[in-house]
Length: 196
Image 1 (cartoon, rainbow, N blue to C red):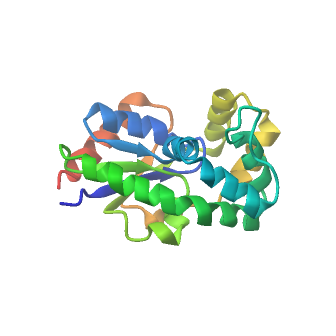
Image 2 (tube, rainbow, N blue to C red):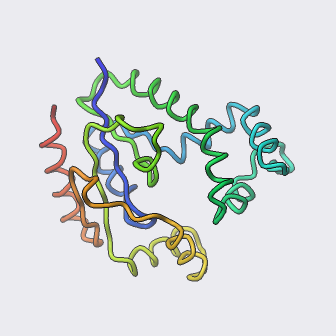
């Protein structure tokens, strides 16, 4: 039986990871798209070669592995380059997710954490439910600056580059304003609702 999939999404700094950490505490398996994609690059070096060929520039570091900073700099603000990368990599991510999900036999549902997946046609129809995590802009800014040790201007540029996620796409909305007790209760309510 195919496990129902709950997409956990939100803008940068909204606290998707905090929500997913709570889901894990309750025994919900979570597929972290960013981490798994990095693993795919490491396991499939030919993907990096494909990206270099498509973007017509070197993307590997001195160790021969993908330089993720170089790739991020290349596709930031360049929609065509980003779409090229996604068209090459996302089919492998989807296949990896489906294989991972098939192994999660002990849970009533699984979660997939991603900021962008809802806007990608390849993943259409994947979600049984969508959890949208929100937070005030200034709080998101402070979180990302602290987490990634980046200057304010750089974080604001990243925030500005992200498309808004419409509330209409969400089954549940969690306002993650930094109150751990409130966040825990919100996640508990969702888990209780989703015991499908």
